[in-house]
Length: 476
Ligand code: HEM
Image (cartoon, rainbow, N blue to C red; front, side):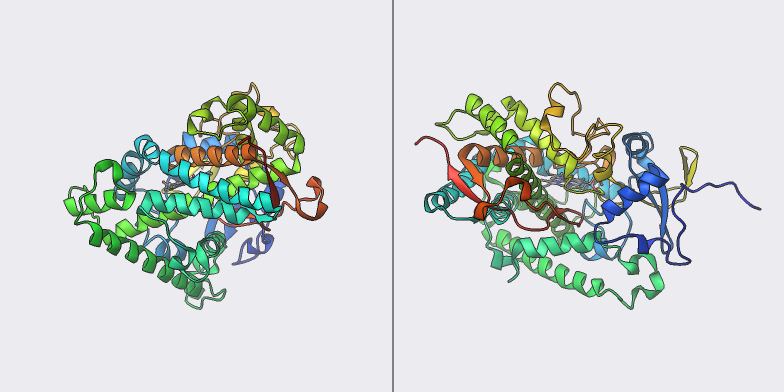
C-alpha cells in the first residue's frame, strides 16, 4: 500500500547516485544555496543514505534539543573505523553505554575545569615563548607565517596537556602535524562514495580508503610511542597535579575500575580525539579572528583599546583578565558566527524512524546541521555578511549551545565537551597577539585585499596561510 511518508523537500536526484553531483569543493556553501530554495529542513540522498540538512535556528533546535536523543548517534563509515579505532573514540562513537561512559570520563576527568586550571601556568609560558619569537621578528621587520605560528603554539599546548611533553613535527611524520591533521580533516568531510555504496566501496575509486589506512598508521605509530614512553617513565610516581591526560587514562585502564572495556585501543582512540580536536579547532578559530581583525582595522583598534584599559600597555594578558574583556568576547562570537570552525558540525545519525515538523525521517538518516548557513540567516542576522562584533554588544545571544542562532560548538548530547578549554585558549591567544602587536600585511597589501577563501574539511580553515608583519607595541 502507498504510504504518506513525506521526506523533507529537496532537489530531484539522479537515479542511484542521488545528489553527489550538486556538491563542489565547498559543500557547506552549496548546501546553503540549496536551502534558500528548499527550506531549513531539506532532504537529499547520497547513494543509499537519506540525508537531512538543517539550516535555521528553529530547525536546529528540533534536531539538537527537542528530539536530541533520536539524532545523537554517528554514522559508521571508513573514517570512523580507521581514525576512530573502530568507533571506540568519543567523536565518532555510536550512541550507547560505551560512548556515554567515555564521554563522562572525558568531561569529569580529562577536560574538567580542574584540569583546565591545572595547565594555566603551562599556557602562560607557551604563549610567552610565541610572543618572544614574534617580538624578534618584529625587531627585524620580518614577515611571519602567522597561521603556522598559531598552529605550532596550539600543538605544543595540546601535547603538554595530553602527553606531558612537546613533540616536534618530525615526531609524527615527515609531513608534520599541521599537514597530517589537515589531510585527515579534509578526508573526514569528503563524501566518500564507499560509505554510500557498500558494494563498490571495495574498489576504492577515490583512493580515500588507502589514504585513511596510511593516516591511521601514522597516528597509531605516534600514539604507541606516547604510551610506551609513559610506561617507561611510570616508575617515578607523579603527584596528581603533575599528571597529564595519558597518565590519567593509563591509571584508569590499569585499575580495571572502568565500568566498560578499556584497553590500549580505547586509550589511543580517545587520545587521538583530544590531540586532533585540541590542535586544530582553537588554532583555526584564532586564525580566522586575526584575519578578520586585520581586514577591519577599526575593529582591531577598538579591541586594542579595551585591552589597554583592562590590561595596560605595560603588561601581558593573563587568563584572569579574560572575563573582563567584553569586546573580546564579541569578537570571538562574531568570528565563530561567520567562520564556524566545523561548518557542518560532525554528522549525526538517526537511531529510529521519526516524524519531525511533519516530515518523515527514516532510521539511519544522516543529519547535517549547517551552522555556516545558520550564521548567515538574514532573518536572525541583519547584514549577515558584514563582520561586526558590535552586534553582540548588549545582546543576550551566547555560543554555548542554548541559543540556536549561534551554535559553533553544537548543542545537546553531542555538543562539544572541549568548549571551555577551547574558548579559554582562543580568547587568551587572540587577546595576547592583538595586545602585544600591531599587524601589517606584507608588500603594502590593503587590509580589504586579504584573501578569505576557505578550505573545506570537518574543520574548515583558511585556504591560504595568513602572512603578516608584527610590530611590538607594549612598553618594556
Ligand atoms: C574553538 C574550539 C572548538 C570548537 C569550535 C569545537 C566544536 C565542536 C563541534 C562543532 C563538535 C561537534 C558537535 C556535534 O556533532 O553536534 C565538537 C565535538 C567534540 N569536540 Fe570540540 N570544538 C572545539 C574545541 C575542542 C577541544 C579543545 C577539545 C578537546 C581537547 C574538543 C573535543 C571535542 C570532542 C571529544 C567532541 C566529540 C563529542 C561527541 O561526539 O560526543 N573540542 N566540537
